[in-house]
Length: 185
Image (cartoon, rainbow, N blue to C red; front, side):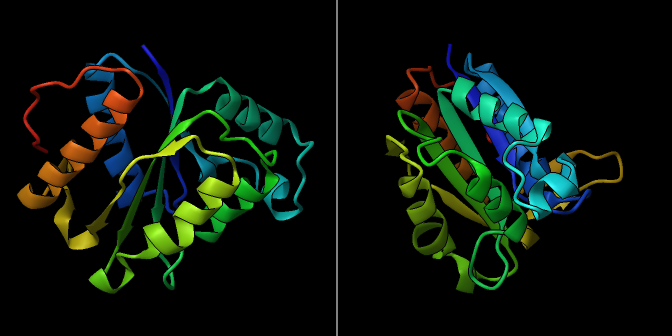
């Protein structure tokens, strides 16, 4: 069993990105991975805004990255790039915080015009942080993610299938097993 840090870079408390990550966390857990969720928006603003790498919350986040065998990074796309909130955290991590790690990049956004944000904005920074292996990522359109009144999540079938595939590839790269779970919800 590998330890996976699942990082949401969304600033929104009602984020589709974070909900999608938690949905994928369930799949990884079913595959035998230990998943630790981290919503960057819950870190104290003063730690992120003042580039305070010595702040206890940043030290704790850094320790989570160090503990993880793999990292899932999810972000909404704004102006063809990953979120500023995620950038703030990544800037505070040690230079090789992802050294030896397998990383799965995921993004959400309102238009397919931003689909290349994973490869041209997010992937280079993950590589610069020393990621050993960056698995194929996936961009999910906001319209393909529906949150019901009870908080349950539904992903459009084509996106759900693609997300299941990239999640399974990531899990296999960590030495996990794939599951025959239906790509629902």
